[in-house]
Length: 161
Image (cartoon, rainbow, N blue to C red; front, top):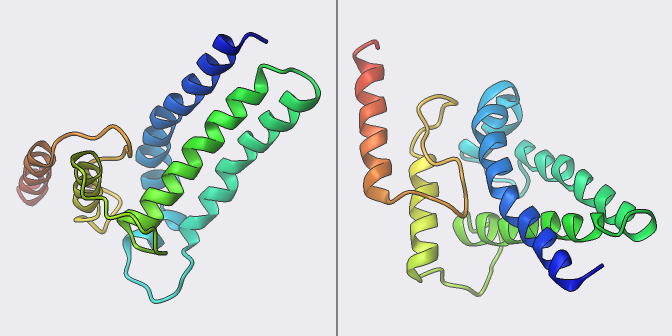
């Protein structure tokens, strides 16, 4: 397989995972599997959350794609590795940097990561499944836009709309 094709498949899978993650977070985690995800929005004093089960579920397609890529269809390998790379970035920065579940040795004080940390904290400003903002991780809107959306949602929910 040509390297350019390999890189294109890897990047497409990596970037496509952001769209997939947004949809899953918005409609599955804050939808019918809120019973798993709720643990991520509640304070706790133990190292694991029921929400961590999603990592196992989301790892399965990557494992399958890598195995298929190694043994059957070579094009599946860069797709599986792209999915895996996204999962690793997500785990390191979401669980390590944002939620401080383990030390990262990384401050996150760059504008790029500061914006993502702010967006995720605004997502956690709501502890219920409804009314949240910012379901993505790498692509996020400004804190100003998210605060305005939160205020609008809070205003419409308190007015009974």
